[in-house]
Amino acid sequence: MLKRLSKCIGEYKKSTVLTPIFVSMEVVVECLLPFITASLIEQIEAGCELSVILKYGAVLVVLAMLSLSFGVLAGKHCAIASCGFAKNLRKDLYENTQNFSFENIDKFSTSSLVTRLTTDVTNVQQSFMMLIRTAIRCPFMLIFALIMSFVMGGKMALIFVAVVPFLIFALVMIIKTVMPIFERAFRKYDVLNNSVQENVKGMRVVKSFVREDYEEQKFDKASEDLAGDFLKAEKVLALSSPVMQLCMYAVTFCICYFGSKTILFGTNTDFGIGGLSGLITYGVQILSSLMMISMIFVTLTMSGESARRIYEVLEEKPTIKNPENAVTEVKNGDVDFDGVYFKYSERAEKYALENINLHIKSGQTVGIIGGTGSAKSTLIQLISRLYDVTKGSVKVGDIDVRSYNLEALRNQVSVVLQKNILFSGTIKENLRWGDENASDEELVRACKLAQADEFISTLPSGYDTYIEQGGTNVSGGQKQRLCIARAILKKPKILILDDSTSAVDTKTDALIRNALQNEIPDTTKIIIAQRISSVENADIIVVLDDGKICDVGTHAKLLESSPIYHEVYTSQTKGGKME
Image (cartoon, rainbow, N blue to C red; front, side):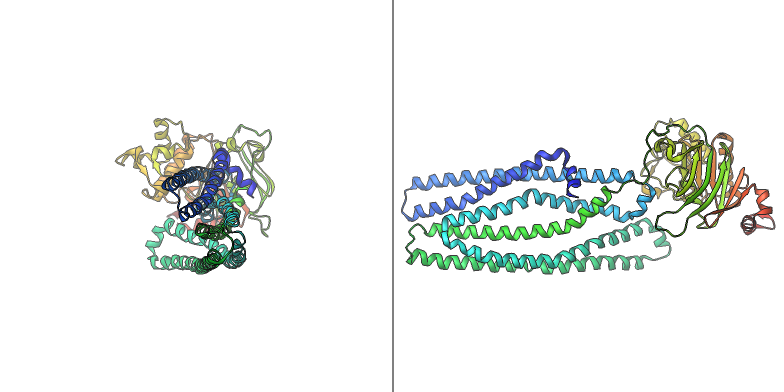
């Protein structure tokens, strides 16, 4: 995992290496300061001249400036390295997610992916920052301060050796207690993000059903659970401060007591007030380093779960990949399902599609009818290879879709999915997702085919009207027509409309179908619909039920031979006439 994450350091290796170097130099200088100060105190105690004091003062100023310079340089390069690392990490995560098939995306919830790209990356960034700076500084400071305390205080430095194990034991117990709490709390971020995402995305539904209070309670519960876990962890972590203070005061007391006795009554003439002062300073440095090391462990513990979650996404391999020597040209819009079986997961007990045999000729219009859960959308998603079949084969242009280059295949199979998505930007920008080089005339033609030009022309800014995120400033029917126009602009050999006219009236639906039939006759058109009127003029109509093809035929034939089709038709008519 660390090897994979370290690849994201990339072009920031120089700053990553320079940071610990400058930190080490800063620590050395800081450890020299108490030593020089102690020598100055001893010189003053001995009655030195002003020139000696100025000399020592100059040395201290130079050392302080060096320490400041090294600290600034370390901070600068640490910021460059950590921010660059986080940037590359997000980039790799996002790019890998973009390559996911639907099966991969189904494995992770949307809220979880958002958390991994934001909160998890931030946690790992903070840990990386600590690793290359604080995690270098504290051990170095601990070692150098301990060495210098023995140099100055001799056996008296053994006081630190006696206190350090107690402090380490206390900190280890604290960390051991908070680690599982942090791990549990962090997993609750997904629940909280999911609550926020659902509420914001479904704001209109929430308000329509006056469920604001319910959503607030749901969010409050998730937030309180998360806050409760962090509160427990913080209460335990708060013990580290009094433990630290206890050790520090105990060390200071012992040093002052035994140091004073040594100075007043001892035979060690080399240990004086300056040495006592320096020893106290080194004691603070040693204990502070231990305290920071404990905080490093806590931070690494928190980010360990984040790193694992990030690694999980980075190492997730797309289940659908381009084959070797992939076919790059789709010669026509023929579609053939030969003995197709499909299930979403290998662990699934039941197939979503069973024994599908269907043959569609290029240019035909095919309607697909079936109840909710009959796997209509699943069927058409196999054509553009959003999923791979479990058994059997799906062919486009007489070639198995698994043999095509994915980009080449999907450029020729244009799908308007059941859930229409528009992105923030102008209408023109949204339409050019179909063809980024499309001229204004081509945009207008596609919109006329999709019956969208009429309402666009009434907007104050026309095709330059800004679409809010998710298309919240246009109606459901307008959104569907824009998505159809976007799909037409791809000039595909196969056009699939997955219940894409459900929000438009029957007249507009008929106009769209007539326009598609007359203007793009060579394009294979597959229409999934709930309304019989949307498919009754299709060349063939497929009736799906529970993942199986029950009947195939024309409208007239199915009325006679298909009980399911006849029942749907009857439920939508009165006295034999369509509603």
